Length: 303
Image 1 (cartoon, rainbow, N blue to C red):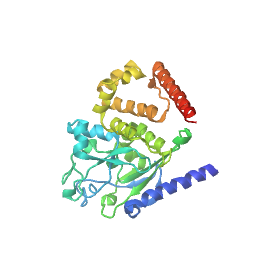
Image 2: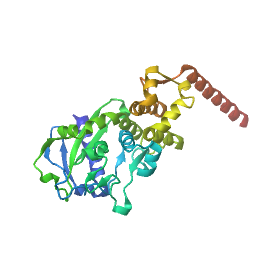
Image 3: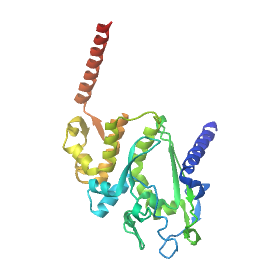
Image 4: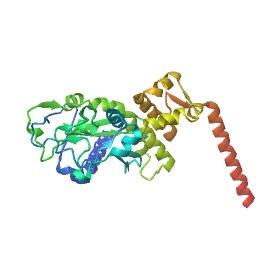
């Protein structure tokens, strides 16, 4: 019972911390919603506030968001990131992500919205798909227990007339209708990486090279593919031929592979799809041992 109470207290603390930023508490109903909780909402061109919510938003793009959007626009990742995003370091994990860049000259409007609506609606980010639902996800990665908890809350802005529409949903039916559940499944490995790093504590800072690697592998599939196939990567790691063939052409398969690689390379966690080759591991261990022995001799010589 005490562990349950601790988890609930921890959840409340995290939500309160999130709501304290940017005056979000003024627009979020502080009521926990479960997957079967119901609400009324409908957004369409007929509501007077149509597209008003598509401005001054802090939208962190997930890896799946980026792939869908850059394919929709027919752009390589490099150009998409340059035109439409800004890099940002997440405070709680210290990991780099891509934030959607709003148009300052247009009052902070989303670059993809027009008076007629969203130009990329079928490929819009998961953050937009969830609206007006907010999601909190807690996972105790540090204990390797796999324990995970999701809960939801309403984002009810004063200007939004969508809540006056008498269309009923549950959280689950809304997620399914908006394909948010698909995005959640595709981004799950990325979220676990963020939570794994967060479990190390805010004081544990990754070296610049590790942050660069994380950003490249989670935002730029073309660069990551070159890293895999145009370096000694496949000489270093043992990867099944079937997986190699899949990731050679398919960005979505490559994205999932990137999550497994980062889990192994950055956090030392075992992966079912990638493993360092035995001879490489032996050389690395031998090198570490030699370096330690050399340092010991140097210390003795200074005494």
